[in-house]
Image (tube, rainbow over all chains, first blue to last red; front, side, top):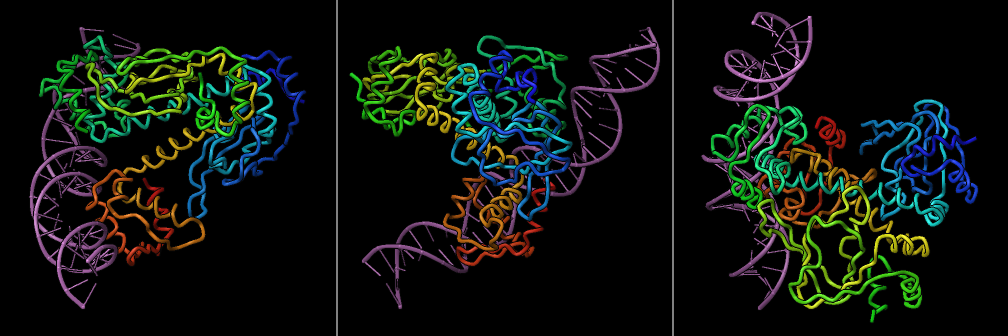
Length: 225
Length: 225
DNA sequence: ATCATTTTGTAACAATTGATACAATTTACG
DNA sequence: CGTAAATTGTATCAATTGTTACAAAATGAT
């Protein structure tokens, strides 16, 4: 019924031998649900009572705006979990409405049963902790980055991080456009700031090599932000 | 040696009877470390190998900027954990250097031992999962909020969220200044946008009562952002 | 009710960034 | 090497927001 070799590709069960996964699932209650194309899997706002893992087919998450219309779409394929980050915490409700893109099979493990698994198997526990921790760290970094308001600050932060403690120059392996997208600004605006920083003697750019000429001044830019 | 009643006030051991906590700690290896005032507890960049819980005194986390100077300070008091969010995940290194503000006593539980506790006690597991999940959810919300670039978008999002699906008006219990701080903008800029929205017939403000006159238009603002 | 304090509305100007366009330079590839 | 494509530098103008200042309105305390 369940393709256990597929499950071991899922972030939660990664690195766990097939027979061990089979054994784990034997110890607990779970449900296998089949959905037809375009059938609704969960509604936004519904309480998250199960860990849902897509075993077959793909599903889509649709944001509903405040007037009730569909906005954004994100696809989730097998064998990915559906709401792994919302199983616990204060607001454990689905942020999106999920519908099946195709015929889909979904494994639903009730939260208390999943807790049992976490306590039975150290590897699953580590996998799960790692995945939500990584997510929190990723969000934290991104948030920290967004806290810099001006382009100058973002660039200074980026340059200093890339150079690290020891070095004063490094190779830039992305284009200005990619950088601009990362910063959420337009390409000409980024180029303007880079140009200004060069004329001010803060940095120098030679082809793809960036050299930091005045690290203290760059740091100063961050403090006064 | 350890004040177990204090430990039960710590987020990780919340709601666990004193004798149970004592029993749990008996099952594992841990260390109790004493620090003198201004002694360094951990260095930024060091790998996180233990869950650290402040049992006595207070410590401070100091960000080190790229030139090696101290920047920001955050105080952590007993009985709070030190790096609970960085025990797992890809980048499990301390983001800050931590020093003792006063004489301090710190409980250090090695990560593998903490994993044991998580598997022994469901309540501790739930506590810990809830705390890092809540953190991720909080960050996610904040990030989502910051994704709105213009003040109009931020205001529209805020208004629609506050009103919810059903209502068209609500009481504002904060001042414009507080709202402006929340949005990360200046007070006059916020007032300007609120004024514009009123003349455009999107909202009306009467004292502290905000009424949404055109929810569809407000939603439209978010989509085209 | 009156007065001091806080909050809000508004205006003028500066600073920053976005949008668009185009030339100069670099890169990739035959 | 030479040419097409991609990337970068730069300019101009519009839009948004910040800064500063001050008056109007609301609030709170006496």
